[in-house]
Amino acid sequence: MLCPQCQAEYREGFTVCADCEISLVAQLAAPASTIPPNPEEPTASGSDDSEDPFCKLWEGGDARICADLCSILDEAGIPHRVLRQEAHIFRISPNSQIKLGVPFSCYEKAEQAIAEAFGGAVETQRLLRAPRGD
Image (cartoon, rainbow, N blue to C red):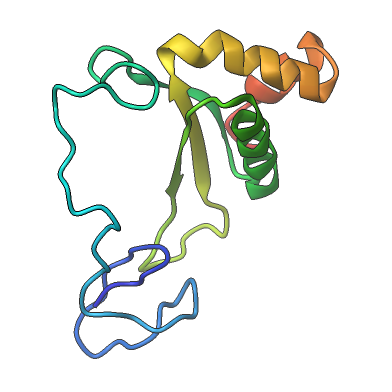
């Protein structure tokens, strides 16, 4: 059984996701596009992931900050990925760790867009280089 929202996997017999509180499904829905990506075709960023790997831009536990950063990157047209790590079975900590990454070629552009949105380089550096406990 799988959660369609967070994609957590559950044993048979479970019907509701403990984290999202929505009904579980036997299989996740297939993506809208049934055409597999061509490995030779460049991605939206202009090159494939092996030539332009994603690099960590921000890491923290505050989903609001992550959402703000994603909005800024969307407005600037910068591709990004969010990885959320949290315990689905045992909740040892109430906080989850979130990582936000951008392609290496867009890293400086992303920093600049965030600096413009947050009012300067000092505030941006404080936000992006915050200690891991935040």
